[in-house]
Each structure stands twice: as C-alpha cells, then as structure tokens.
Image 1 (cartoon, rainbow, N blue to C red):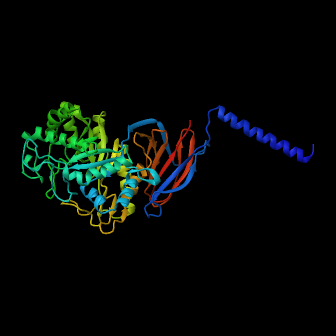
Image 2 (tube, rainbow, N blue to C red):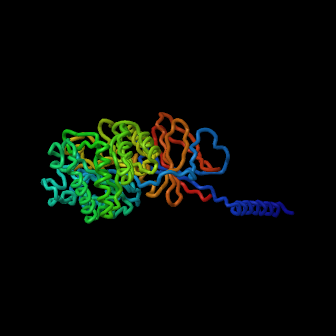
Length: 478
C-alpha cells in the first residue's frame, strides 16, 4: 500500500472510531458538555453586570480543590422575585422628572428582561403616605366611621400609573401593599404620627384596607400581598407610623380583616410583622393565635436590626408560612461601592433566600440627587437608581447591580436548590421553571478565588476576581 493510501486508511479508521464514540455516547444518553454563561460585578466598578467568557463543563474527574456543589434534586421555596418599592417619591420622580421616552426606557430597564433589563418581578406600594411622600395623608382624612370620603385619588396621580406601566412590561409582577398608619382620627394620638389604633376602629380599619384593595384593582393595580402595618414596633416622630403589638394584630387579622376579605372573595395574602430581624418573638406571638394564623400567609422582614437567620427561626416553628424580605435601604451611611454592594448581595440576595425568602425587596426604587423627596425620616437614603430632578439623568447605584445579579436571571416560579460552597465564598443557587440553573457567588476577599462548579459528574473551572460577584447560568440535559 502506498504511503498516501495508508494515510487515508488511517484517517478513515480514526473518523470511524470518533463517530462510533459519539454514537455510543448518544446511545448512553450523554449530552454534549454544556457551557455556563457568566456575568460579573466588581467592587472597583471595572465590571458592572458585564458578561464574561463562558465556562466549559466537562465530565473529567479532576475537580479537586475548592468546589461549589449544586444539587437541583434538593429543592426548596418557590420564588416570587426581586425588586424595590414604588414609593410616592419614586413614582413622582418617574412621572414628573422624566419625559415620556425616558420614563418608558427606565421602566423597561427595571422591570423588563429584554436588552439586559433587570426583570424586577416584585414591588411594594404604601397605602397612603410614608416618609417618602411629598406630604402626610391617608385615604380617609375626614373623621367618618362610614368612610364616606375614602379615596385613592392621591395614589392615582403617580403611584398607580407607574405600577401599571411596570405591569405592562412585566405581567408577572407581584405587588405588595403596606400602610404606615391608619387615619389619624382612628388613633390614640389623633394624628398619623405616633400612637396606636383604637380597638373600636378595628372593623372600620379592616374596611379601609378592603376598600384600598378594591380601588387599586379597579385602577389596574393588584394587591397580591398585604401587610397590615409597616414596622409595628416603631413610632417615628416625624412621619406616619403606628405601634401595634402582636396580640392586638392577631385580634385584628383573626376577627376582623381576615374574615372580611374572605367574605368578599378577595384573594390577597396577609403578611405579618414587616419589621426587623431582631424581634422574631413578635411574629411568633401573633402566629400562636389560631384564628389569626388561619388568615396569615406569611411573615415579612426588614434589615435594620438583628440577623437574617431570624427568618429561619420563625419558619422552623411554622413551616407552612411564607417568608418575604420586604425592606432595606442603601444610604450614605455606607457610601463605599464595594462594601455596600458586597453586603447587599451577601445579606439580602444570598442570605435572605438561604433563609427561605420567596421575595426580596429594596426600599425606594428611585430617589433624587438630594435623597428625596421625603417628608420626615431618612435624609440620606439611596434609591436603586438616582434620578437627577434637574436633568432627568439616571444613575445606577450599587443596589441596582446587587439585585440585578438575581433579578435578571432568576425567573418567577424558580426554586432555590441545594448548594455547598467552600470557606471564603458565599453562594446561592436556583433552578428556573425551564430547568436552567442559576448560581450566584460572591468573593469578598482581596485575592482572586479559584474553584470548580460541580453538578453531578460534571464540573467547570472558575476564577472570581477579588471583591467580585458573579452569576453563572447553564442548562443540563441529563
């Protein structure tokens, strides 16, 4: 045989062997090794939700050293989503300080998923005024137990249109509503500032909340979740608030609001607490009341005191009750981008979901260059974005990027799944309804982290720069 014929024969044998191997793999049900897409944000802002080169998974058994193990067969809570509150201040800025095109573009960016949108699918509105309103008002300021003057007109100006626009971009958006105070004439102070709700007005206030749900729905804004009081263990002295102990909240929900909504056929799910991690005994006390518990879907939490593990402490007692994280604000008390970005991602995105949160919310969606507008309360809070009230320019803050690492990739209906990470890294993992995996990893160290990502018998080598977070997205056909 000539050298040329020998070479052709050898190539034919090699090709045949390769095709046979591929056919054998197919017969064995082995799909081609997938790759994971990667997005990163670094504390030095050199990367801001920037896509990086993909990682390649292989079946090689050399995944030694630090490894993050992901197990989609161990599934936990179903996710509602991530987002921020459409406060009066946020809505007013969006509606009055942006032209039509800029407003539409920002709503698409925050709530949509096309062209790199954040895909926010959870939001919160205030029933009446909060500290982030232009002034203090309720939906029934005139003293009248019949609520003849009840009106959502103030919310129809800016809040409802903003939420409707968000819903038009993302129909999966779920809306939570929270009052900061009952109308002043129902309270012990006669004012929306400080005081408690008088027990004789429990039936009236229950009807007030029912009317809000009905009116908001009539204006195209659903109320998927309702907490009966924002921060009920705090009486601020410069903006609406109302102290409300757990035993009294139980009476209100179990004997007034719950039965009223049930009789009206309203499907809104009631959440208790809506306050900090430091007092888990408060929701535990409320849920110990059998009547109240029957009408309470879950517990909402804030970040301003205590530890995120409190969420699990309550859920361990009442595992049938949902967990939501519903408020935390960035602010100039934590101005460093790297530090506050890492804290937000580690504590809220990773920590709160690891402790069972189905939804995770920042406070104001948008504030201006003066950290407002606001009527009392926080004078240096940050919004997820900053809208310059003079020019309409939009600045994206560290909370924007921290939340984007989850909201852009974790779809409504996703499940948190088991993940084990080595010391020095923080991580949480999800599987989307279509089977796509999402892994969020944070390296807080001053040195790069090298590790493998492993699922089953496949692994991919990864490197995460210092003070950097990454989201990895992949799919397996197993």
